[in-house]
Length: 528
Image: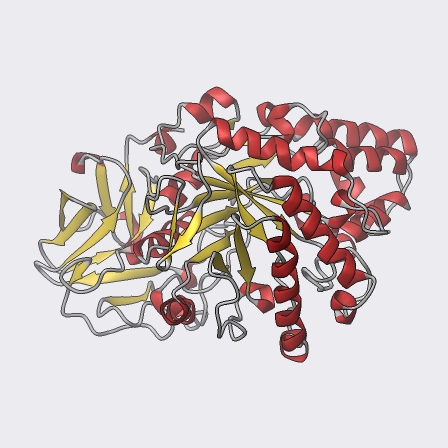
């Protein structure tokens, strides 16, 4: 496991292969793909920097009563030390914050970063722009440009953006006000102002108009209104900016694409999000089908929050299908699923309890803890977890699940005579995947490790191979087969031969074999 003190030197030395884009011109859609300013096909590899301008409560270990930014603010404002709470909420994202905290460079191997903001930062209640707050996004795009990366601007937390009880900036969950005055007009004004401000900035890749709109029953009730809002927003942007890419997300956490039946703008991108589901082609088939029907590029704009095994497999799936991706998020408190983990300051549990109304805390005590948090979130004081980035990029990951073989089909990614597939888990690949052990009950979905915890015994999967059958595992960068260990149940070495191939590694069984994990020893992530 790679968990070391995070420094810019450590991150720069991670040896992930850089993939800079050409940002002298605008990134745009062309024949179902994205191309950069030089006209080269562009595969986006990004990281989400949304923690600072949209600090969702779960990132700070808050409970149900303080999950959204608005509810977090109300809880902290009602607690002792509320003035410090407000300062703490601003401190991690204001232009005056030190660069290691507020403007981290995208991790090595990235082409993009996604910068989220809430309308409370970008505009006043009367929809007037708060231009000083835009320096946050400007700083992020400038930092990205210095590393050959682009920045995608996203509007999150607006009633039109994600009207759900876990994420809104207001108590009500009904989104009907999202397209009626004054909210509808303020949304239009906000995007027109943003597009006008960044119209000539080629390091801004595009405008992601609404984040995860209309979850649950609202996805059906207000489907037509959402389409109308998207069209109106597009019109506002195009009045002042004809060049930037426009990004549309599906409803219901960006998973429902039923609304995408026509092309609304030729220079546009469709975005889906994917968490905690089987990382296989069947799970993204509706998005692939829409791409083929409309001829528009598609993008996995938010995913992660899972084990290293799931991240590696899901992100290889995206790249195999020519889909760019964005790992979410860059940094959280006390986490194993993000590249950077913030160490909770002493007394943080009392802050959490106070925000939930379960405890009281004196103003001086609250101030001391929140001041310590401002120090803890600085990159040099946090924990760098290079194995998360390695899993996402496929660049010498510490471990690969046996079921994470390639997605290119028989004779290319695998050669087996297997047919014992598990329902809902890589069913379109004729490879024998099964649960490990003889447990009485196995979960229907074994991929719900939201905290990145190790798989429970009843969740573990393995692959069975016959003699001369093989699997390929795709990697970015060179790997010496001598550094690879393939393990079966109880970490017993499997009877296999490992060889280097063009896309990564091929593992061939020399006798009947059961595979659980492929370990790459001698890697930076393995040694840490």
